Length: 178
Image (cartoon, rainbow, N blue to C red; front, side, top):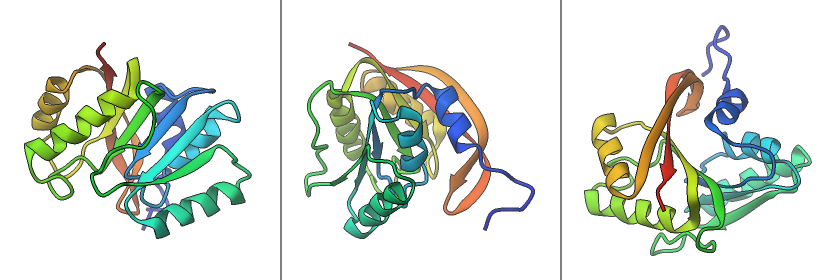
């Protein structure tokens, strides 16, 4: 549960991290849409947010949340068995990897590298990869991301959602190298 004294700053952190109006964004492993819906509000009608997950029930819930908020720019994508992201090469401005790129979902370095390679494929050159690192050694993850063709940019800290709770945490930002 959220502590009454802790206010989540999701919208503010996403804006600070670089999401802006008109962007095409992918929320990889979107879960309940805690970041999908705020991202859709930021990008507005000229932008689009792809909610990407393996669980169709979660995706249906995200779509319902977006519709309840009159957001028509959320597109749900169910992850294929091979895990490939079903969007065109170099079509996205931002990818969110929040609480997903860790050893529980991707136990091997190779499986994480495959995800990062596909993300590199769908991001435009110099586009943003935003990572909320959880359940994995942060320095290890940063090294893996950099080896996959991304350059570390900055860290933004605030009160973020994690496992249904609002707590102080950080988002790491990377740029896709050409």
